[in-house]
Image (cartoon, rainbow, N blue to C red):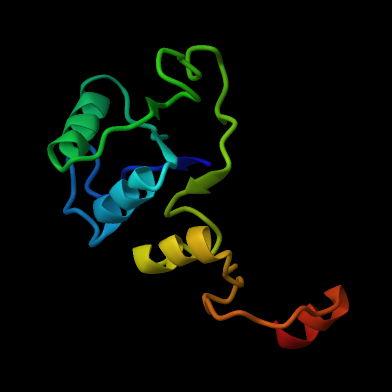
Length: 136
């Protein structure tokens, strides 16, 4: 699986252009996923020196990326005019519902649990589409 992960607000707290405090378990979880064979891509709006600082921040903590702002090493997706890359999963604090806890992210990726839009990460029984309107 190829996983694209944002930096600001996802790996570290928002402090752009500075690097914020590391979000607990973010890098540990990403390293564990890497150890289990997943490819981690850094997908961020940072560029130039700010991007280099973010990559080095992660490298110093033992996280090496499969690619940075690209689908594979050596590609420049942004220069090619693409804003999205072909990955299996995007992890970003701007998701609908925000960024769940990194333990929940790991469980979703490993155990196939799917979070619902209400921020509740328990497994729910399947419902027909019209039944959602009764609860929201």
